Image 1 (tube, rainbow, N blue to C red):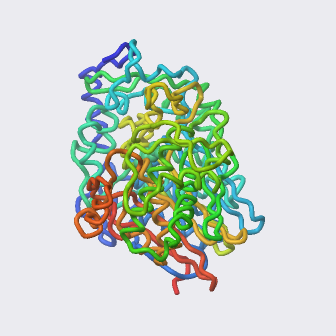
Image 2 (cartoon, helix red, strand yellow; image 1 turned 45 degrees about the vertical axis):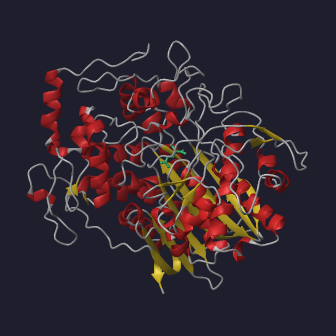
Length: 620
Ligand code: GLU
């Protein structure tokens, strides 16, 4: 372990106590919808019957508003709010809060996210930046040892050092207060009740727990909450989280101040600074009460770009999502011009080739230019002139450009030259969750929220049942390329660069769609691909989401799903020089589309991550 303060092992006495308390989390084996035994019948059961899982479908069309999330409980909560007269912001907060309960490894109170809202009446699109912030003590050397070498990534992930000041409670509060119509407490109540009464475990929750069991066992509180009785909850079990119900109670009573000024905040700080372990030494965090109190949801101007007559509105810095998607789309338009053949008219392999070349180029630029720093040249990066310059000389319809593609110079002076240098591949992650909502008046919310990797830091806040994020691992620990300035090094109060890309699509100022996905850096390619799927390939939303994915992020290999790598498409791409690597699944998207006839179409995954849940208030 490098020269950083680490935790002391938990004493055996404390371990024993933790195990005894763990028994309070009741698991009711085999309880499925409709047949769930009452929790009150069982010792330790509290708060009423478990809530049966609502039915889930990957697609829905109708009126009255739509919600698409990865989980039927969350979708139902959003639909209930819409049916009760709430607007899209209200429904998004309610659905997100439920995701904090049923998808606790992807998102929740201990994390952050980006909330993009389009108001149909005013035509204004608002971006809420609820990204986690680094403690005030962080600087460019925080993730290095005494000799300038990066700390081992795996050691930082499961440690207090990776924990940033959470932004999610403040995001929910701001969204409810400024964009919604209902009191925050009403929007959090379904989540609180679900945590208290219990929900039916699905195979994804069970598999994610199993995959993280080893690192969860390092932290007795996490094992107590998420491995009740020492076991991985199985599909069909009922899972209760009374600590998380308490956390929601405090948020319902005090709003985000429960975190900045309340006991919950004190517990977060204590835990991040000194996570209790069963013996393993982990880095201590540096988060303070002052960091929580200094936290602010920012409202930056969204990124806007034109794509085939549509306005694509996305998330600005500290996310690279909106910028990289805009550049990708601009490059695709530039390739149309260079080849004389438009994307909608080319064969599937040519479409995938073009898409991969565009995203790899956008990643070269995103890596070099985007981070939570002053002076990011956003307007130039999303300009058609810059994309035209980048396409010219780099793009070949028959041959993949050698990786890494050099980054360009977004300097406003565009010709057909000017490659500047290279940057390396970025990681992909598999945590996070995205939800999309449209209401009957045409407001749209696209909201991606996260605790970074699945299970976040693995550290649960004692008594509160939620996991702390490990978002600060999204910083680069050391510059990715020696000698090239890196905008994504840690700094005091800084927000790590994200790839999250909640997106709203407008036509003549009116929202016609919204979409997003989890998946770390693959978010950018997933969102771009789903968007081109329905804009250029003419696919219905559910099919655009289901289409096999490719993710080229300027590394030596291009990731693609088996439906591509194992068939003729893979062969055609390989013949063009792409070095493909198979990924079982890329992303887990949701989307809505507002149809010209006044109906709304909601879409979610058919199979990825066990399939998602799309619903409308009035199905037609
Ligand atoms: N922390 C990642 C980001 O902000 C998201 C992680 C994920 O999607 O799994 O880009």
